Length: 278
Image (tube, rainbow, N blue to C red; front, side):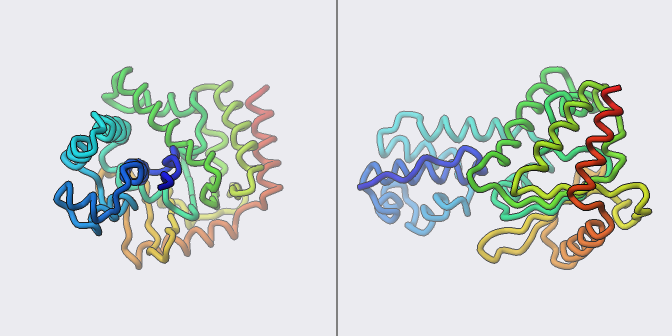
């Protein structure tokens, strides 16, 4: 029997664990129903874990390891994936799965470069300045953010429709050298075929996005879209409420309509980079 492909290292923790479980099951020559019988689950429950629709538990990982003689293979994998997720704030963790599984992301950013686009120096300056963050915590969170950016290097990354306010280019984060490097990063990313990057200039007098930044994720398999809403609150930042998400999609469309074209946007970024250089 042919084993399944290696799990996608850029997928969400649930997807990565599910892919590894499926590979181990196929190597053992078992159907989902047969494995379920050994670990006291139904075949459909095994299927849900393998497809990432159900979160794995430590008990499940330990049981499969014991039944199939895998040592601590799945247990250690789940422990590592859990530690990676723990470096993200608790309110942000639900968004990680939506972001990694999305077919497209519609991004409006008012105050700073989006986390997926940040260079190391820019991200470190933001994270280190969080009140109450120790140097050790800052480095752990920085590593988690940089790991999250691997989403952009997938063979089939999500399509990204990104609009940044012009203030993002001028707000100093980490000093001139960091800002210059960040401008280069934006220019490089904007050349990728799956990324549309536009700037909303001051001259547009746009006011629709002034209430705050947000991202809308369009999901596969006809699943409803989900939104991440940036705010100072640590609650209710991820929303699948139909009316709210539709409103944000409409707002993103209005903001894009006021933004510069992609070519004009690149010109503005280049001009700003020259100012940071001098």
